[in-house]
Length: 95
Length: 387
Image 1 (cartoon, each protein chain N blue to C red):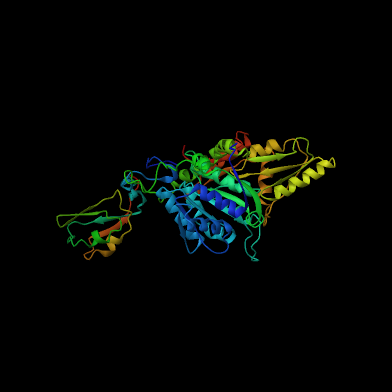
Image 2 (cartoon, helix red, strand yellow):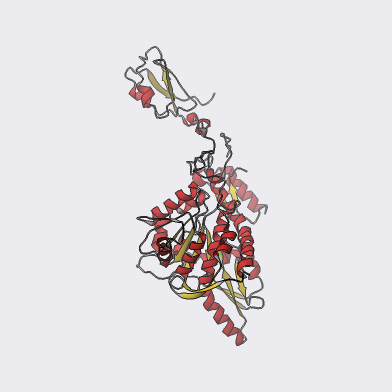
């Protein structure tokens, strides 16, 4: 099996680099991708709070683009959005 | 051999307790009532009498006992436990956690039957039930072996190239409750032999914070679990090396096997545990009558000494494997191992798919081509394992 995440394996799988889970990009698990319409968005922050991966960024009172390195495509943001500014669409894996 | 020693009349349980007193572990945890044995009764008395500095933690189940020991060993303390029978069954969920996390725990096991029918007496079903969970298993014939193998076990478990948990198995009741003469070696000699436990990684190492026992997906699980295979392969050599060192103190041998009248034997009995003593007596008597019989005692059951067994039984006639378990729809585990040791060359081992890792058709085809082309090696192969 090819190893996409080249992390040195220590005895018993010990992880001695704090915060190394950042290197584990769970975005590759995604089947459906959230498409965010920034014109419809009212920046209420609900999706930010509901995102189980903490990968929707919120700066200066504004929602920003999803961090697709970690977004698993669960669709909770699309479900919770009060103005339907997020739609789930099939991930294009070809590119 | 150390001259100053002390003869004591001890049960196997008390012999284990005496060894644990000399080991003076940082933490000891156990469930305090049946199926527990005189091992923790004896050791609890030593704790109450302040003969050790050990933190003794009584818990509500064996599952918790081993969980406590996993935690305290991961934290960096030398830790031990003891159990028997159903207690080991209840611990079984945590056993592969201990080996997978490479924690050098030493457990004393008084081997006893499993329910049902409910029974408290000796057989090896409990030890055999957990034989493939990554624990080293040493079987003891008598109280002296129980006492000394505890020291060997601590050193073996903590060896940097091994770092695996060890089970020191004695026969329940037959060994654990019967009194024998035990030569007890001086505390300072044992203390020097054991040394300090200094793990490379431990949770309370605040300068080097780490995560132990993490979640691992199919892209890491197989490699981490395979470390246990590698450590087991190294454990046999370390067991023999530590045994040679212990021999300088005790004068006793610590081999993977003990061979008794094998050279010209026409019939040999292979056995583990206290029954080896009985078989040895029978061999002695039958030899007096000119019968060419012998005994092969297995001391180290995991890792199993296949090559040593093969060599030991190479010249003998018939082999009888005597084991305190049976196979339900199979053969007894010991008989299986002996059959493997003496098997022909037609079978190859391939492990695959641990932790959900996929196997592909091309990999299966490769195995077929290896088998057809006779391009194989006579040791386990791991399909899809990264180097």
